[in-house]
Image 1: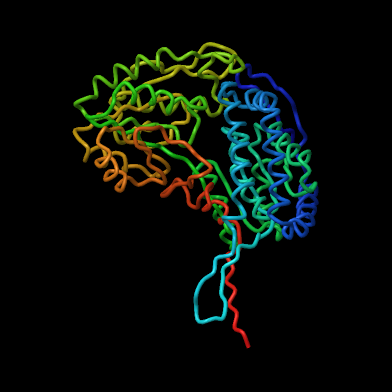
Image 2: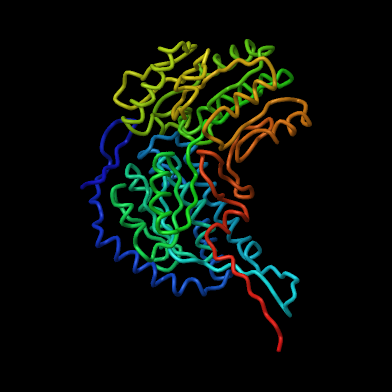
Length: 456
């Protein structure tokens, strides 16, 4: 079966690729295993030099790589360039810190000497999504490779050019030929790949449904998994917040990546004392967003990545409106060849509506009016997801106390939720488990080995 790269801004096919056969995939796995047997014994210094080369290549060719992401999934070019720059950052970060993160930990026990060491585990299958086609891969790959592992990438089927380009980047930076390999396969082949005995663990960023399926397959084989799944992040605005800043940041937080981000603010929970002011300013700013060609550097909002995703978005909005939600702006796709949807604000969003219950993956914000901080907390936690949250208030002690009660993997106070190589990233509840980034992320795919020694 052919794998197509379709430009969502034009609906035209950019390129077509032949899907790899399972035989080809298994041969690649064996090749990566051969490279791993050498790579796991290299020093951190050797690995660091190569990872620095990757970072340098990313910076030197950021416009070329960013354009590929734009053509395949439609993000604005300015955001795509920032994504490539962030990939370079994470490569530098682990090139500089992996040795410290994974150094032996001496522990005093009844032994003459005892310590903990961190050994690579082998080949890790990475099942990655299309929405940040470079960043999602590099934020996992940089620490995993610096830890001494090998990688097989099964990227989303609508971003094959990005997937192959990442493999090329590692190769031309002088990494061993088979320490990072991309395989172009459809999701139906994933189970067979996970079943391969040389695959030791799986990391997945994607939907809740896909996460459940992959975790089930991997669990039967007792293979370690890390799951970074969906989110329906609350954006809580209290009565003492800076409303202008909250509204401005809220628009950015909702529309980042064309609204297609797991950590995008989705449910705007605003106390009634400032609700009308926030709604007016927020809606006005949403109406001013420039929609258009994502290759234009002035464009702020590009297309939805695929037709099926746009259709699902339309259904979620219709169901919510049928149940009483009110459209304050937007609410329809644009009449173009591309897959564009207007920046949309829904008010009167309540429990039972899809805009309340599900992750909305597109430029649609749900406004929810609450009486006070206590109701805001109740609504914020009334979700099956638990990825990120943001709180807006001038009382930082109040915010810190509220942050303790928020059920999420991260809480940002007076700022939009974002990932940072220095901070752990991941969620709880149906947003998944495990962590990426920081020193926690690099330890997800290592053997944490105890060594106990008695002198005779």
